[in-house]
Amino acid sequence: MHSAVEERIIRPARNILGSLRLPGDKSISHRYGMLAAFAEGTSRFTNFSTGEDCASTLACMEALGAKVNRLGGGAIEVTGVAGDVTPSSDPLDCGNSGSTMRMISGLLAPQEGTFTLIGDASLSRRPMERIRKPLAEMGAKLTLTEGHAPLTIEGAALKAIDYTTPVPSAQVKSSILLAGLQTTGTTTVREAIRTRDHSELALRAFGAEVKRSADWVSITGAQKLHAIEGAVPGDISSAAFFLCAAALFPGSSLVLESLGLNPTRATLLDVLTALGAHIAVLNLEEKNAELVGTVQVTAPPDGLRSTTISGGLAAQLIDELPVLAAIAPYTSGGIRIRDAKELRVKESDRIALVARNLRAMGAEVEEFEDGLDVPGGQTLHGATIDSGGDHRIAMAFSVAALRAEGQTLIQGAESAAVSFPEFFDLLDLVAER
Ligand code: S3P
Image (tube, rainbow, N blue to C red; front, side, top):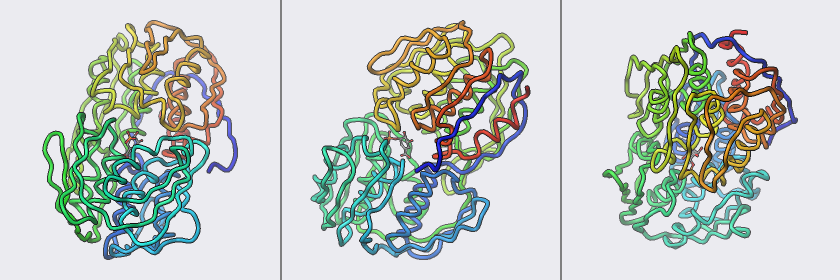
């Protein structure tokens, strides 16, 4: 997916100061892009994600017959296929994006035709049985390659199911809901821990009826979707790198405007508060049922404290755990992470890579099958960081590097563009040296 392997030098910072407006949320952009491409009519969005992952979703949907007009500056127009995709003779390339592959599988399973989905080396290692199983229960014909991509779907009429997800996964839930949208009867997904609910909110925004309670969501098909317009809220998982960076420097002040604050995504704000950072939320409003607001963070004058992240918290913070672990040595009491085994099957084995890179910077860290113990009160030195081609590892260690002694070299820095191409430029903008 990435054009060239790039290295970046990160120098220590003295402070983090400024105000930023971040590009659109990756999870919401995937859903808006996919649903708009499937709906009837032309949808218009501003602040659409600039990341490569969402570009993969749009490219797949174009290959299936949707029209995408990229207007620049994050503005796009998408004209949908009104519920009937055109099978593409070429494989659909999902790049590095698990969301694209898992969600599009559910969308395509009830469609007519044969579809092949491929991804890059990292995506081709990630587990796909978790979508094959429920979709097969619905009657879908989905063939994997030893549990992974490439995967082939032979479209078939499906039947509604009542399914309990064995691991918390918004991608799996969404995949089933997208199949259920097109299937006669009521499809229900039950989850022990509520995962991000952007699909439920987006489906409603596009005109579908979705019912839900605390631990289940159901959709009765078949339903049609209609085009919408809207602004994508800033990506809170991208903001996490800046929020954590600002939390490290007494005297810091960082304002992030128009940030997505959906409660299923905003747990990081509670964790930072528990660590002692001061968080203020202003100008809260709702856009297409998504909560949006301005967040100001200031670091505690006497440093961050300590915390434990386990159980449901680990699932809700899954994308933010690498950066929390990377700043943990600078807290006074450390950070303990458990029940986060899913980190091992993300774009990389994020538990192993975080531990390895923390050690490269001279930190003490203990690795567990489902988490990490990172003691506090440590001094880190600059080092060479292996991002493993994983965007969140590259960005997490760029943040750790801001408080290290000496400079840090991030290998595979281009991977940041998977979710956040502007990351290094914005970091330079707010990091005082
Ligand atoms: C996502 C869900 C999460 C998350 C990923 C995006 C989504 O994955 O890690 O970055 O947009 O639904 P899982 O659903 O596999 O936990």
